[in-house]
Structure formats: structure tokens, C-alpha cells
Amino acid sequence: MIRLSGKAYAVNDEEQILWRDKISEEQPYLANVYPGDTRDIGIIFCIDEAEVEYFNLGVKPIFREVYTMGNAVAKAKGYYITDRCIECGRCMAKCQQKCIDKGTPFVIRQNNCLHCGSCYENCKVKAIERM
Image 1 (cartoon, helix red, strand yellow):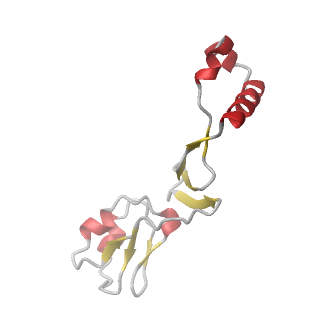
Image 2: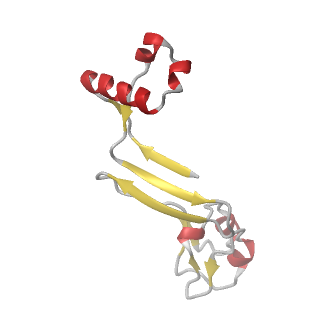
Image 3: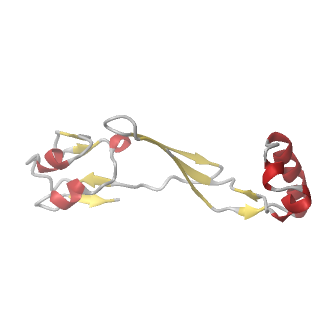
């Protein structure tokens, strides 16, 4: 799965025509969807600054990576374990993806975390915080 987060804006009128022609050329089946000049009702948008999040949900633990486009800055997401951790192991037992490693404090492998919050909800000493 891929999630794209960014602001879209309509390209200028001249580029609308250029991109509409290019899309029609590369995607000829669209002539069936938008016959004749009905294709002109579409608006071409551009997203040139964005965060792209890739998830492979077909493996266990899941795998995720974050990329950016343009000058976008990736936002921190998910959970982390603070130094209030007493190393009881409850979070490890509750983690569906088994992506919490022992340590002082325990550590969540961010590229395998589902962001479900199970560790957060089950920590008795509130050592897990949301980013």
C-alpha cells in the first residue's frame, strides 16, 4: 500500500491542455470514459511536495518506509518508549507485529510498527508516548 500526503493544486491553463493531451495519449482507454471533448471537463492537478509512505502489509512484521518529494519534511508518526520504561515486557506481549525489542528502555522498530497503539494502551507506567 502507498499513501501520498501533500497539497494538490491545479496546473495553469496552458499546462492543463498539455497534460490532458499527454494523459490521453498514454491512456487511450480513457477515450471510452471521456468521449469527444468531455475530457475537457477534467482538471489536472499537481503534487510536487509530499510525504510518501510505503507499507508492505503482506509480511509479518509489516514493513514501512517514508520518502519525501520536493521540499517536504516527513512527519514523525507512531509511538516511542520513554525512559520511564520499567522493562516489564507487557508492551512486547501486546504488540501484534512483535516489533518491540528489549533494552533500557525497550525500543519500537519504527519500520515494522503498525501504529495500532496496543503498546500505548497497555503500558501500566505510561512510558509509551505518541509522536
